[in-house]
Length: 238
Length: 77
Image: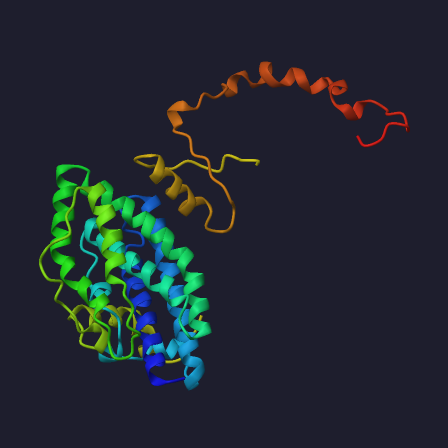
């Protein structure tokens, strides 16, 4: 496997793992039982996707998926900055999921035609899950944006906080294939925002670095939680 | 398609009810189709009246087709 494809698989896996972990932090805390389950379902979907990417990457090096998830440090992770941002309130969590699912939707559709057949198959399998994530999070964006005065205000704040991280999706790293996803992504976002009474900000979405291993301060805390057990008790299993 | 009552849930609107039902009740492959009905539109029989509503049918076995002996000439039943 060439090193670009290998790093690309880590990037795809890291995006899914870190967002899956973030969503799992809501387990037992979501506003109502039904949404607690909905969000943890999405977590499990994402962590499942991460496993597929890691397993495939690990095959070529003799490493294991666990080693890739549990024994790399912050600067070796290649996820986008958006997915490591804190959960904040419900509006932040929803908007983060919506931005990312809309991106994953376009990305996986396009990866169905990637030259690598294994990657094609992972994308095709995951696409069904993503379609549901997008639908679920999109409906919540509408409910919050077009809901009460408070929900609207919270959605506005989430938009202000998270928009700046969305540009990174579309700045290809050296190991990434150049895919024209920005326009269809904006189209998706616009359609939902229109219904929600929200507007795509005109401010530049300038934050980037995660794809190259330059992360915000949050990722270290995520990994401390995620990796603690394997670091403290190497090789333990259950 | 046979639909069965599997449970109740909270939701703000029909779309959310369908999604919540999917997330809460089909995680282990329990279903391939969902109906949701707002509880205010469900009218149910009174359990206290079960005796008078349902017991009278229990001694009328002749209402079952299996009560009757079919002549051997009758096929495909």
